[in-house]
Every structure is written in structure tokens, then in C-alpha cells.
Image (cartoon, rainbow, N blue to C red; front, side, top):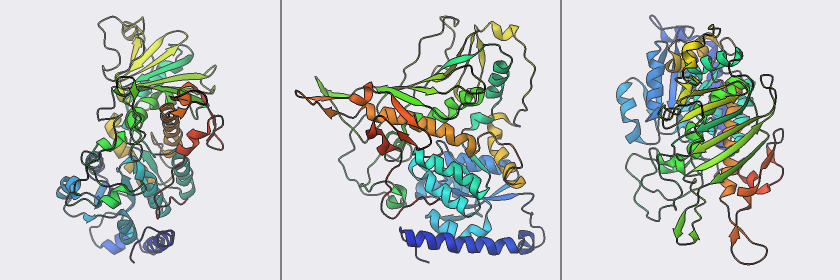
Length: 483
């Protein structure tokens, strides 16, 4: 079947692949595989979409679990895929993930998605529609609408899901929960989070040069859902994070690693409002630049979460990136490390404070002397391997089947977390949009002076309509999400 980027071809693709999967289910694999074949109940076969960079390390961890075979590899860029191709010589390699899913769906059990943010949703959704378990790198999606759709789809298709924020499987976040449950810091009302990201260029104009597309890269497939633009250098493999068409900035990169701990400790779900300020880029004296394609160099977003069953009132969460940090807590000595130096999480309670590093690692009570004095019984089961065990946990979950094992970051948890991150990005994006003044000359930035009020049920900002354009993108013609 010749694939085209159209609704008709997508429907035919899902239909044909589903039929293939149905046929496969009639005949067990151990019968098809013959003597010596490992039964599906003992091992899974994983197909990777995006197998360079983080995708390469994801596949390695799955394989190291001893219960996953890497059966299929797919990447639009042969340069990025070469190490994985060499590491798994028996795995069949594809360029187009749609072709792989169509032709091989009867031959694998689960899909790992580690592509740029803008294509996460369509790839994960297509896999789930075929009944495949999915592991998706953080952030789960590029848009709020997509996150909600994938969260609902995981339940609809009854597949085992996990987002790639491995800190959620770490010992650190479980220690934080135990301290909180023991009442060590009292009721938490404020959380402060910071990071040195971005570590790639942001706040810059789109390049004007038009170099040739490198050999081995299918640029059109890489673009996927994004608007068509000519290829530019220095976008792949990592700097796409700083461009709104493909990435979600510093929040998308580290937000899932840093916000997960307060979500788990405080049982946060969906935010009720958000506001943000961003750094300005001046191209000449008194001349502020406007670079709508690029995320700002730094930002500060403030989210409000409603009271939960673990808090006495609303929670205020501050996010700071680009090297901006909150005020050092008075309980921390002048020469003691704040967070991990680059990133950190600070819980402020009515009786004290606790702090952690990226991935919620190295949790500490403040002042640091309390860590020698306070002893709390361990009540929560730890994930074998801690953060590194995040991958094997998903593999074990896939083997057991939907709803049979507890996972650290299934879509029912990762979805609301991702939505909060992307909601903060709504405020960051509108904060930097100039609007002509109604009287006089020049521009002003009303988004930077507005608290966005969020209607969670309808996924809509109720008091600043310009922000709603970023809740759900319009995909490039021929690409659809499905449901």
C-alpha cells in the first residue's frame, strides 16, 4: 500500500494494520516461532521510533532488562540511527514509522517514541490504536489537546503506558512523600522550581540560509505535523527544542523531571491559572526584537493549583528557567548547595522546607542538620534500580498486561503533569506577543500583565483568547491525530 499524508490513507493504514494484528492474535507466537522461541508472556518485542540520542539510551535500558528484544528500528535520519543499527543487527530498520507500523504490527508488542516533541502524539496514538503498549519520551506531547487525547486513548485501548521522566521511579521522590506524610514540614503552600536550561540558542530569528538537506535525512518526514520550512543547519539533533514549531523550550525539556515530585507529593492534577514574564531581546538601543518562532532566553511562570486531598489550600508553583533562581531559603547556609547548582525543587511548608535536585534526586530537609536528626520509617516500596529501573518497570508492566502492575508515570499521571507544563508555556508565549497601542505609537505586551484563567473541562483560556491558539495546533495538511 502506498502511503500518502491523507485521512483516507491513514484510515486504510489503521484498518490494514489492525487486521494484521487481529490475525496475529489467533496464532500464538510460540507456534509461529517454533522450538526455542520465547513466549510473549516471558518477553516483549519493542519497536523504536526515533533511535538516536535519547532514543538510543532508551532502547539500551529496555534491552538490559533482559525481558525485551529490540526487534525494529525507525528513524528519519540515518546519521542519528547508526549506533542503534549497529547495536541491534537483527532488528529491521525503517525510515517511515507509518510503514513500520503497517508492515510489522503483528511482530512486536510495544513501541518506544523518542522523536522531537511535535510528533510524539501522532506516533503514540497510531501505536495505541493497534493495541501496542507505548513508552513516550518527555514531554508526553507538544500541545495540551494532544496530552488529553493520549491520556484518554490509553484507557480506551487498554495499553500499558509510561512517560520518560525516569525520576518518577527514583528513591528521592518517595523519600519526599514519606517526609511530607510524616508531617515534617507541615502543610505545603508554595513550590519553587528552577533550571539553567535552555542550553541551546533561544530568543533568535529563524536562519535565513538554505543549505542542502544532508544525505540520509528525510526532512519532510522529520517535519511531520509542523508547517513546511526549508531545512536549516544546527536544528538537529537537539536545538529544535528552542523552536515552538517542534519543541516546548526549557519547560518541555526539564519540567517533567522537576514538576513530577510536587505532583506526586501533593497529588496535584490540573492548574486553575497561570501568569508569566519573559526576558526581552533587544537588537539595538531601545529596539526590542520579536522572534515568534523561538522560545525566550529565560522565563518565570507562576501556576496555581486548587486544593487537593493532601493540602489545606491552593498551591502556588513557581517555574524559573534560563538561570533564574528563587531567593535562597534562610535555612540554607551561604556556602551550601542550592538544589544541584543548576536545577532544583523547593517545598515550602508551614513547619519547614525540603529540597531536591533534578529528577528529585538527593532529597534534603532544611536546615541540612535536620537530615541527621529526623528519622521517618520507610513506607513506600522502591522501584528496583531506582530511576534506571523506570524502563524495566514498563517492560514488566507490558508483560503483565494493562492494569496489572503499578507504574511510575502512566499517562493517567503523565497527562495532567504534561498539561501543566504546556499551560505554563501558554503564558510564556503570549507574554512576548506585541500588540499595537490603541492610542499613541508603539507596541505593548498585554499578555505579560495578564493572569490566564483556565477552563479545564473545555481546555480553554477564558479571559485571553490569543492563548487558545496554542492549546491545539493545526497540523500540516495530511497529518491527523485520530482518537
